Image (cartoon, helix red, strand yellow):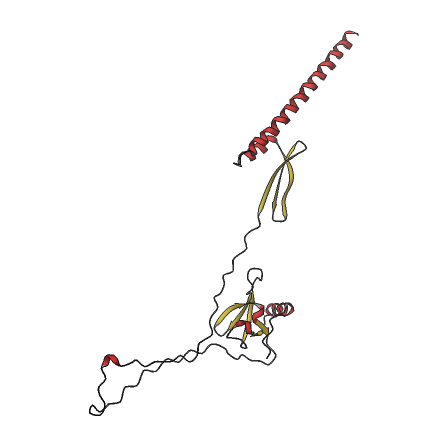
Length: 227
């Protein structure tokens, strides 16, 4: 069995389709998986690859652990699981009672010098990998824009790349209220300066119109007297 190659993109897609059909495809651990290389497990889930590189969840014995595609390869047909679960270590047997000794032939050893029997650990179970917590994605950012151009104030809203509200016109008084909520030096002064300029221009235009209206009324009065 060649367990040196990781899963390709097409193999990952094939596993995703098998899971959607209710099957749990078998995989074999590659050398990058460490001491469990060459053993066989079952894929039970594919999480979000954008959150973590280890998005292939494999059932191995009693564990369900995430691995990256480089740690796994598709198991050849006819291959059964080599290791279903790590075997528990046998409990050490209690030391046998010492046989009676002849006091005359063997000198007595002080009790405090007797060494405890050592139990050697012959095999270590595969180390478990800590399951990484998947962080949920937060909502997209919201942007509200207050703009001034060509004598009009407009407000627009956008969340991520989606436009929630296209720019629409608001009154200058409403724009000034919105700016008052932003405690940034210079912003409110700039808005008040723009409003002052518009106010002065409007007053000049009103004066001009009143003067033109007065001339028209005077002309009208002359025409009436001429009848």
